[in-house]
Image (cartoon, rainbow, N blue to C red):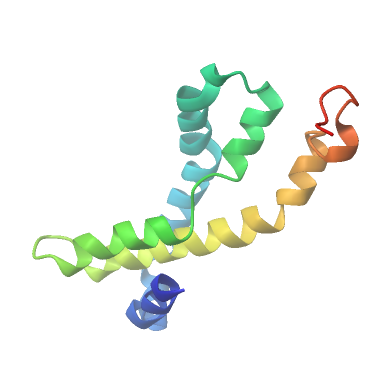
Length: 124
């Protein structure tokens, strides 16, 4: 909660429009290419099915962690500007809205709901 409050205090809505298109491009690449590659490389060997890996790619890490990681370069001296933070804010917002609203449909499409499990695989 504190991180999201801090996020709200650091964002200047009028400055967001300057960085909207690069941020949307980054969000698309992260959601559709970078996160799936990272998931398959990091947990692909752990015995998850292909559908489970796809689902993990869709519901991966986002929200508070990227916000925290974006705050550090902005508050330290160096070449990073507030525009960097604005881009991260837009990416997090896109990821949270699009991916969070589609978690249940993605699980249904990938047939990963409890009703899709066989009786042998459900713990009693």
